[in-house]
Structure formats: structure tokens, C-alpha cells
Length: 454
Image (cartoon, rainbow, N blue to C red; front, side, top):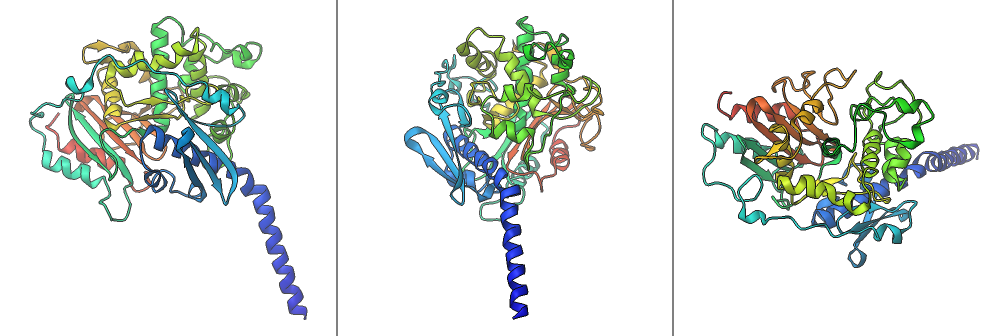
């Protein structure tokens, strides 16, 4: 009898502990899980034109996101997600704006933001690479193409095999020519894939263009009215670009943090990010923050007189001029581009973006971006130990020891990368859904070894 009572107490304590765990720890995090899943599935299906199974088995396959179950609603271009039927979240697709997660802004207002994008000024199938899609019959001499193709295909897990490398696409541009590409099953040259934080480098480009338009100045205080009367008034655009704003911020993608609250709780991400208090004097500490990127995005928006001019600007000014015709920059529920995280593009389009920087802002003879802005972008951010520039990563700290020191790159969650290597006239793109078993240093070293001596 005594043993039965003890067992009941143990069982009671176990269930009490389980309830407390669910209430205190798990329940606050489940809406973030379902928000991530709904947004990711919506973009994968309606922007990336992929199947539900393809997105579920790849980008949404890691724990705890794998707990979510998604439902696609073609009738209104939306996706809902739940965990055990709870914490339902909904993401909607809007023409010209991609997908957004519904939060504290009414669905009708979010859907009303849809806009028709201006059509591209040319047919890519009639124009030569890199602006168009026509590839030449001959490729640069001196490349060991047999070995290069082996390296590229080794980066892709074979159909039916254990998914280890978890790569979706790779593309290599050498001497301005697309010399190699490889794709996972169900993915091809026309499949837009998520860039995650590679979006920050697009955002930096847009800032540089607004500077060239004489609408922004990077060394003056950031034009955020809410900061005028406190310590944040000393934060410059350059501080934000370099991740040295000094604003208090927690960048943690696997728990409740400023980053996950901004992305999955608040509809106006700019408003949430500018609300953060000061933790350090500007330019005294380097700390990676997606919040500062979305502050920059809101600042850009405020330089335009109307939403249409703002929302079409990246396409007319950047994407169409660089042949990035399969690229989508997504907005939050307030209509501001999520410059920290949300863009979709094909591997070839990501390679084109790398080419723009390889040639210091000039693309196919067109000065799309000031060469001076590219130089500014690649200067080391204060206190970053040579790892960061202005929304671009650097290899000055030799993090990639077998790769030239002049390498710089875009870096996104789950292993999205665009590597630009000027000394080898090379751009390398890798897109996937994990980087756990993918060695970027080895991958780049092997690719470089197939090229003629520099």
C-alpha cells in the first residue's frame, strides 16, 4: 500500500512537472514554431513554386519546427500551421510582395497591400548571360571541368541516399561565365530559394543606391524621429550597417529572443526594432543584429513619397538591371521589406548578385551601384575582428583558411552563401537547408583547385 502511494506521488509530480514545462517553457514557444512553419511553407509553395512535401522534408524538417503541421489553402493563397492542433498561425501570399505572417495587423489590410510589379524591360531568353539566360557554346579554357563537376555533384545528396550535405543548389561563375551548377531533385535553375540573411547584403545595396540618390547620408544620425531626444540620437546609418549601433538585442533563432519576436510576433518589424534601448555607446561594440537591418529597411521606406515607389524600387533599380528576374523581396505585415531575412531567388540570380559586387557595382557595362559604395561595404566594421563589413561578411580573420583573404560573402541561416573571390575572378553560390555537415572551406578549396593558376 505504501509503495502504491509513493508511486502515485511520483506520477503526480511527473505530470505536474510536465504541465509546468508546457505552460512555462513550451507554450510560449509554440507560436514561434507554427509561425516559422506557416511563413516558410507559404513562401516555398507560392514564391518558390515547390511542393508541400519538398519544403516539409527540407527547410521545415529540423526540430522543433518539424513538430508543426501545415495546411495549404490554394483558394486564398495562404498556409496555416499548428502543433498538435494548437497555436494556429496563418501566412498569406500577396502579388508582388511575397508571403507574410499574420500577426497584429488585420488580414484584410495585409492582403490589400498587393501590387503589380512593372514587367522586366527585356526577355531573358533572347539575351546572353549574365543579363539574360542564353549561355555560350564555349567555356573558359584551362578549367578541369571533369573535376569541377565531381565537386559540384558531390555537394548534392544522391537521390535515395542519406541526406547529409543537405544542399539544394550550387552555381559557379568564373571569368563572368556560368561554368557549373547542380541541383537537388525537384530543384532547378528556375526555382527561387530562400536567402535568409543574405537579404542583408541586398539591403546594403539599396542603402547605397539611396545614398547615390542623395536621399540618405551614412555618417549623419539615423533619421529615426523616435530617437531624437535620447542617447540613440548618436546612432548613424554607418553604425547600423556595421552592426555597431549599441542597441540592446538578442539574436537567437532557437528560442524566444528579439530576433524571433520581431519575425514571428510583430507585424511592423521596424517599429519593434527601433523600440530597443541602448546597451552600449555607438561604434564601441560589434554585435550581429537582424533588428538593425530592419531599421535600415524602414529608414529606406521613409525616403519615398509613396508605397508603390518604395515597393518597386528594388526591382526597377537593382533586380531588372542585373537580370535577377526570379527574385522576390518580401515585406512584413506593415508593408516594409524584411531586409534582415526574407528574399527568394534562383541560384543563378544569387550568382548575378555576386557578380555585381565582383565587378564593384558594374554589371554588363551598366553602373548599377557606385564602386565607392562597394569599397565602403568591404571596410572592416569596428570591433568585428575582420569578420564583417557593411552587411557583408569578410575573410580578413582567415575563418576560411584555404581560401584567399580577399574573399567576402553573403551568409544566411541554414547555410545559404554567396562567395565573391576577386583574386580568382570567382563567384560561388551554395543554397541548402543545413550546414551541419557541409565544409565550406573544403568546398571552396576544391573548386579553386580546378581553375587555372591565378
